[in-house]
Length: 416
Image (cartoon, rainbow, N blue to C red; front, top):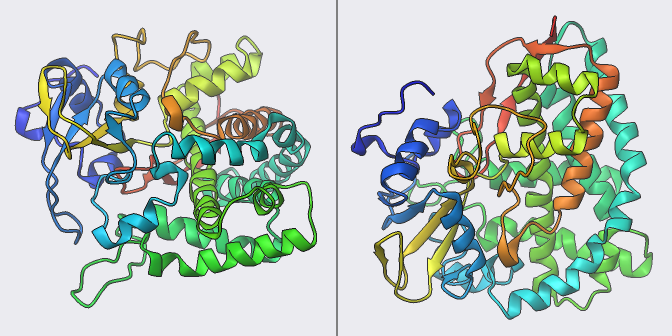
């Protein structure tokens, strides 16, 4: 972070290829300091057509303000992804809780929050710990270096989620396939579905999600006949209509899986790059819960979320018109010097730690407790099973302006 001078024309936080090199700290800091509400071009990239542009919001205070003020900054008007959906798809997309505003959002959130009471998620701790131990032990036995993503974190996140949902063992690979199709659609390494015009097809369109929705209805019908102590049983009996149930299954399958799937390797990457902090964790001089929150701040699993202005308003002196896209950057807010002392340093004892990795306001992550539980258990088991570790090769990151994903993280045991 020694050279933070960035030319104005280089202030691009839209291009998903930027994030394949890591968080663009210099760009984010330049925006926070001089252009905290910045008009961002939405150019054509990776075969996707250009868009109308948006306001990029990068300071912590402003990110929280936008997320909390759902009457001014709507999740419903244009949904929550940067790129505009096909207008014909909007009614379909708005069935998802993530893409609703008060009061409709509150009704749906109250219905489904019953499925996420801490008592239920806490009961999964023993299973998560056993799974973490088995995966980490097998990874260590493979040799002095291994890919943590392929050997541990992908399967750990997926199987924990399928346990919570109550997905039969034989169907679990389907969830990973659906998640990768939706989350990794910008990454050139991932297979694409193209339309008649040769352009990529939106993986969130009704046609692309039909298979997942049919499965959700089949699983719900099974849970009505054979109820169990799992989230899908709660949803199947929770008063949701078919569309709401399908969209909530989509939200859980994608967001519930990929939050931990992105955060877990990111935390290990941070510890491998900061041997002093890894040593403190091993010595027990910092609490694991506090450490997990700092790792989430340092490597937020979600980079950005979009809102749409419901009325003419202003932010940091910029005039925002009704219908304008407003995109908050969690990855910038978590490093705002106005809120965090030495934000580019990893401090596992940092407190308070008001990071926005799980959002804020009415849409704050419903599964945050379950995600923290999984990350805590994984790091506890890693401290027990793995010797001190370091990077064996540079990480490979996901090409995405939405998920802060790590595709490959090769670790080796070393002297820390």
